[in-house]
Length: 190
Image 1 (cartoon, helix red, strand yellow):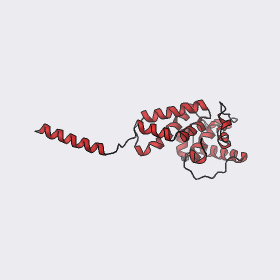
Image 2 (spheres, helix red, strand yellow):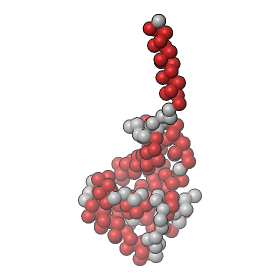
Image 3 (cartoon, rainbow, N blue to C red):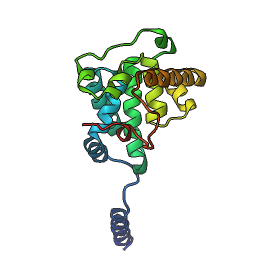
Image 4 (cartoon, rainbow, N blue to C red):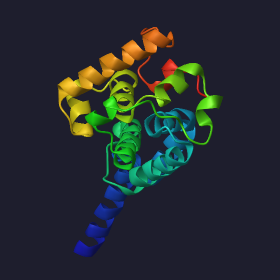
């Protein structure tokens, strides 16, 4: 008798559980996000790494880390996907504030030649300035968040962003406007 009641209760709870949506993002959720937002996520990888081959690796590792990593709430999955790409780019490139004093770098593989002028101007920036600019302007990270991700001070982030605005303004490539919240809103990715 007790066994039958327990089985019935288990079946009831199983039915209830099937009706409650999963709280955590699944591997399939991340695959869908990376597929649907491929252009935007790859552009983020490309802007940060300034290298086609590294951007591809960064994108793929971001997908793998998102799908196999720490469980996150389904509502946070989009932000988490972007963050994994950023963290992988930081690990790959290792941008440091001292990079800002170096000369501009050129993107390898000819990728910059095929990009819009705005993207090419950002890709050609020194690594630290590029990271600080993309994270704070395009991704809307606070100076504190940027400093934590880049292992530097908030002042160094602010200085890098200011230098970048000045460089881009001198090149006539960035107007400073825009109201979008992500990289895809600032540039027309293809």
